[in-house]
Every structure is written in C-alpha cells, then in structure tokens.
Length: 331
Image (cartoon, rainbow, N blue to C red):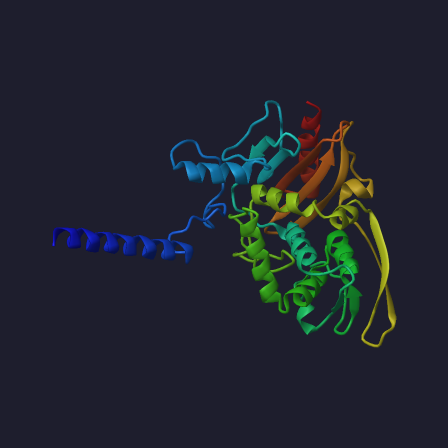
C-alpha cells in the first residue's frame, strides 16, 4: 500500500506539471516582450527601482531615442513668449535643451506630420483619392486647397499640398480615403502615437484645428517627427519651397494648383545660423495653439537635429526662438 500511494502521488504531480505546461504554451502566464508604457503617462528613463525585466525593456525602447523626464536648461539661452521648446541631437541621442516638453498643448497643423505618417504607412503614393462632402472645412480662416466633391488626386499630390500648403480639406481627403472614414483614420493616428511612445498625445482630427481633446507635447512631437523623417518622400516634400500640380474634377477636367511653403526659412524670410542647414519642417498656427514650428536640421559634419517651439506669441517670436535654439548646435 505504501508503494502504491507513492506511485499515485507521482502520477498526480506529473499530471499537474503537464497541465501547467499546456496552459503556458496556450498563452496563460507567458511573458510579453512588448515595451511597457502607460497611455496615461510619459515615458522616461527609470531612476531606480522596478524589476530587471522592466528595466531591460525600457532600455531597449529608449536606446535609439533622446529621452528626458525633466527640463534641460542652457545658460544664456533667451527664449521669449513661448509654451515649450526643445533641441534634440539625433546622432548622440541627447537632449540639448528642453523646456516644458511634457506639458500638453494644442499642436495646430503639426498634427499633419502624423497624418502623413499614417498615410505613408497604410496607403501608396499612386493611390487615387476621391473627395466627398466629408472633406469640407467650414471653420472661418482655416487654410484649404478648395477641393470639391468628386475631385481626384494621387496620394503623393495630396501629401505635397498637406505639408506645404497645410490644407485642412486635403487632410480630410487623405483621412477618408486611407481610413475608410475620417473617424477610423483618427483612431489609426492615435494607435500610431501610442506605438511610438507618444503617450501624452490624443488626436480628434487629421488636420489640427482646435478641439479640447486634441493635444500633444513637444516631446511627443519629437517622437512623431523622428518617425516621419524615416520616409524619403516626407523629407523631399518638407525641403521644398513651392509646388505646382494638376488634379481632376468630377468631370475629368484638369484643375491647376500651386502653393508655397508656410515655412519662413524656405520662403527666404529668415536665415538659419551659420553652419546650420535646415532640411525641412512643419508649421502650425491657431489662436489656441499659438505659433508652432518643428524642424529637421544638420550641422557641418552632417549630424542631424530636431528642434521645436510651441505656443509662441506670434510668428516673429516663433522664428526668433527657433534661431536661438539652432545657434546652440554650434556651441
């Protein structure tokens, strides 16, 4: 009887072991190697504590990024009437300057950087986009390309008009054709934001016109813009000073279109500091957001930088503050 009891016990233990292994392979209790971050907080390097697996994941996520959880001041730097400002050294993965970079702000047309990313990731450059009544913008003073229901253009045409003319109706055109509906496209934008670690960002539209629930941060815009410049066509477009094209109306008649960039560096109205080359950027302006500008630049050694200023009082101060940041590249 004694030997029989031991045999039964071994069989029971073996059964438990097999059951546990089966549950493990079925997904119960398996480890996830996705980068952990909260959609309600900001991603920042750990200052201590936490388990080793979490630290390893955090280190892996941040290894190719400039990361800061606090302001980074530069002695003698004088910025005026702004909400947030930052300068990121992409080669050395360092934050050279950071002021209020995790404070939520309205992004205005900086939003269109994410619109372009989602379009490039989920559409094709030769995709034909067709305008419906849903693309119309009714807000007074909002920039539009004045496209009409039934008009058609290619994705690459739309991206030029989106990023250079900052046309809000074209943002809706892209959104509806790529996402099926504008609302679904906005969901895709928010999903991409979380995937990039931009967890202090929430979009409610594809163009950036003001909505109380439509916001981002200067740091999140760095993450988003850093993703956008991985696309050659994005870099080519934001480096242009003007664009001319023709698309078709609902009757197949060609419609001529031309626009200039909204970026004053490429208009020749302001000049970058010596030894700094502006590779491109995106502007954004609304009454609520103030004047915003994000740039991709390089120094004489070819090292790349992303700089951003948000919620400036006016355009002159926006560009003056940006020049102050860019001058730090030479220091």
